[in-house]
Length: 207
Image (cartoon, rainbow, N blue to C red; front, side, top):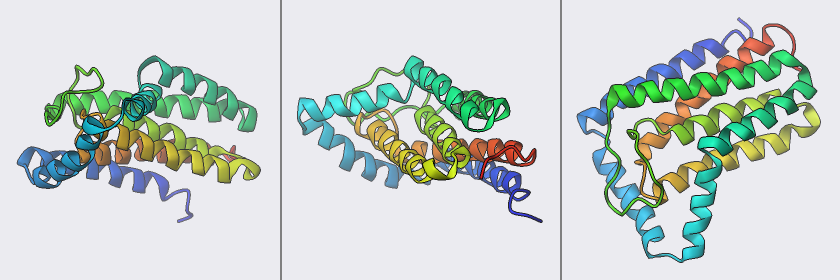
């Protein structure tokens, strides 16, 4: 079995882990750790400067809603230039499907948002898994895997930066628990792996 054929197996394992973590969340097994992380991080925002709060809100704004889809469209154009329309379709498809999966899981688990501080970002949906974390992992990890060699280091740096910043901003703004971020990141990574596999199996990835 070559390394590319292992990708869907790893992705399926991540999807299973997302579901199992969701059940652990429902059972209350993550409550203590979630509370400690949120208390440590969200209080810093609550007591911090307006500039820092605005920075976290700006990062969160980029990672969700209309800005997210504008970025996805632009990145699809970029990967089309790198390796053709199937790469662009893989990136767009991974983004759409991961977003749909996140929304369905939110409805399925129905976890309420944290209430340690007043929410510094308006939210109306459930909490687990984080849609922002899902999208960041799906889009930027797949972008890094599709990047040509000369851009790969920069793409991986961008991927890890966006995943970390999105995750921390959501906790700091008081709208997500840490386990929401972990679940969303695993979910997004699973779809990024599926997208990588879909491209690699056709021999379309540039190396």
